[in-house]
Image 1 (cartoon, rainbow, N blue to C red):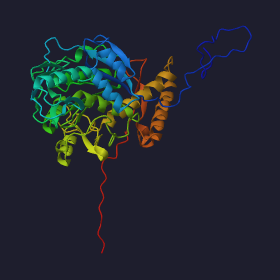
Image 2: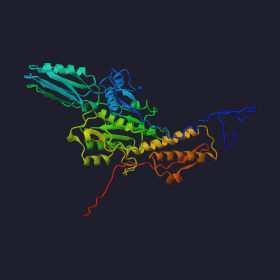
Image 3: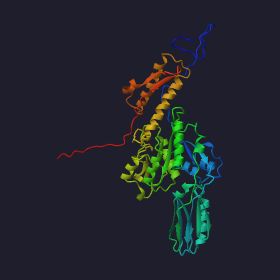
Image 4: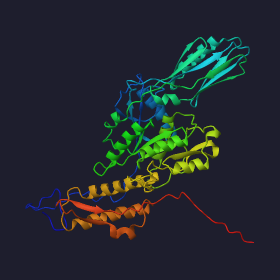
Length: 474
């Protein structure tokens, strides 16, 4: 059994042969805090050309991987490219979905007239990508349309495919579903006198896949951030359920969900109110040139770039996301409206950089419909997740085969306080000494093999507002 204060795992007490016996104990070796690398999962739709089948979790190391795995121009490949552009050092996995069986691809047209009486250039903008063809003098509408169709085929990373008939090029989203309706297409002619080009808005895309079908596959995978391309209530509700289950006290895999919106403030705040989750954050950038799923991927990647859970994300830029037209920029009233209604506003800063104004969750009301700011900032839930992880790992490392005696609870309490003080040194929590009397570790009243603990956690808040009064003295 060993002495009262020293126990052995591998040296039995029954030894009688003389000798000097030593074993190695590594349980107390780790006294630091755990790292907080953010493991990111992107969910999206694939194309038949992809080599990785649906519902298969894969590691992603580059945008080129995603092109091979999911097909060039697929929703998921474009999301990965946007995420890697925003944060090249992601710890990234992806899982693909096929288009819904009842899905319909969005489509639109580019109608060209001619003939040209002077040389020029036809430019079609698809999101933030340009498709350009030269116009020669005397080119007819049919010739120009055929050239444009051929150029579409030469740019496989476009989210659209094209066909041409006479002077009309019909473009269709490569992936079926409602998100294709939001792909922006415009056409302009430079110098090509006699030629016009008019692009219609994409429409008729319908029926998205349901994210719940893949969430079961990744339930135990331990992701910290899940990025979804869909921003409808059905899919976000399914994601909310997954986040709550995976992050609950029994599973303890703290995870947040990320989505985006490119519509109006009213649409975004209405959606956020229908979700009301402290683990879901949605970014708004009205008029965004990029697809909404690319914006979501970039936002989630930037969140993952900050491993300090308590540090605000204010002013962090979404590299790779273009500034929308100035008329679409959020004004101060709109920003305040977002921040009071569960939406993370993205604004345009110096250098036309799209950046995070303040990252918040969609949680605004408690179950009684009473306004509740406890989980307003995204940093709050991320901090709570980290503190739980740090305490859990310390207890697991130091007490893998511990007996439960009167000496056990004080030792566990000491370890918990040590974790909290180290978190305080990193400005993750504060006022540990003041709250230390509230750290209670005691035997459970119903289970003789269980310890219960109460751990006050005063999280460090972000400095979001500074107010000063300047007194005029004459």
